[in-house]
Length: 477
Length: 122
Image (cartoon, rainbow over all chains, first blue to last red; front, top):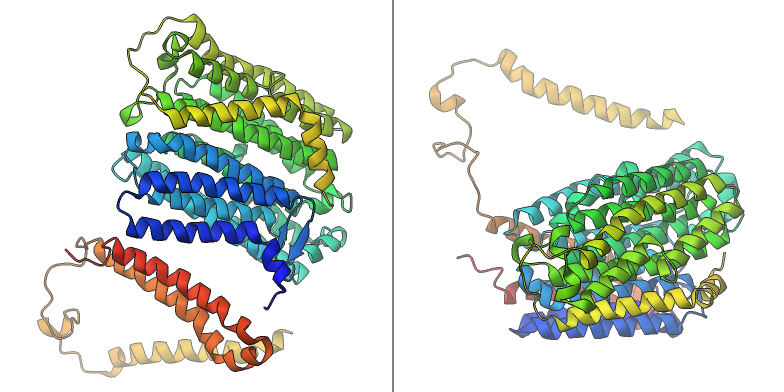
């Protein structure tokens, strides 16, 4: 229980985040007009935690009796979570009053969910994974239904809660079986004995249930049913966080659980499972998104498809694929947050102006927004030099290295399908006359968020090798 | 292996038989002279009014939720308090501070509810 002082120093990102939440609660308690203060405080907190995490990227350590890992891979994930959340808070500041959730609690719950994600990414014990997951998920359930007067928000929250709790049931049962067969919940021990444990039926069943539960959380195909309704019903910026931070956190856990496979210590037993769900997610997401006129719903299906692309990396199961997945997640986080940021600026009161017709002739109304929306759509479609292309490229290359060329080919084909619905938005913005009459409200912080995401995507796309080398250098399998 | 569980099975069987015997023996051997008051549901001696499917104010749920704060507090504090002497001998002040931080964070939630007016009944 008593730890040396260095351990408390190394866990600084978590301590900072936790004390930030406590301070936010105190501000919310004693200060009547807390919303602007809390907004900027959250941005400051997220950026601080992000940089503190990044500063420790080279001294990786496992702390508190094999409970949590800091530095290295978790540091990169913490960077994605905190900067993603900072961008999300920036685009929320004006948006939440428009949507009717102008509460200080909004920021506190977002901070708590980010803490949960950080715990998930650093977990070295099955219980830590579970705790982080619950902290994140419960915050998301609340965020989805934060506007209790909106019936769609209630529906989203209820659906998300019921299906999320169901998925959590799978995860807990999987954890129980893994504990029963290996005799411990400590992941380093499980990884050491992974190759012998994987021949144990009980352990494989447990791991399978665990993976199914997390397939819910990453919204892969047979477990995607909640995604479109939840994404459409929640507030736009919250949807942005759920589709990026939540997915990234779930992928970080999948990478942790399969790290014995990535380290070539064990056979990739679940390769057929991952290959199956990735093919189905890619094709289902890309094809169904074509029929969507509501942009939030379109992005929801696109998020299913992107989960499919990333799962290719899990199916490939080598070191390159992990680096590819992490790069893809970073790129996806900012391009999706940017797209949702543009959506949140244009969205009117009561969920209006979300369909594609509202975007017709956007170029004449606001050239900046149109340009950035086009950038995000190109990035999501995977057109170079935007970051989205390199994310897909690295994952596909890793798949080819693992003799999964057919999977990479299906991935490329499904990207080609997805170009249609992404570029449809661009075509509407630039080549169609506006049919809906509305004016875009001034939203400086929202614009700032969009600009930051755009710049990050371009930077990721221009120097992808440098970033990929950083990621590879910290993978310590 | 399975023999170790025989006492447990015996306890379960005894409990089931005893429970069933108590419930059904009064039905079998007791005198049956029912009247309206005897067969009505027991409501602490009061006459039952209305039915049970009434809407209950959401405020009760808030109180029930706040109760959980103290529930969890007790779950953690109780074993810690029981073992405190040996913990203190071994770890010194480190046995005390983590629980203090935990309690401060926990009570902060309660103070938050109080400040937000969660305990006002009207």
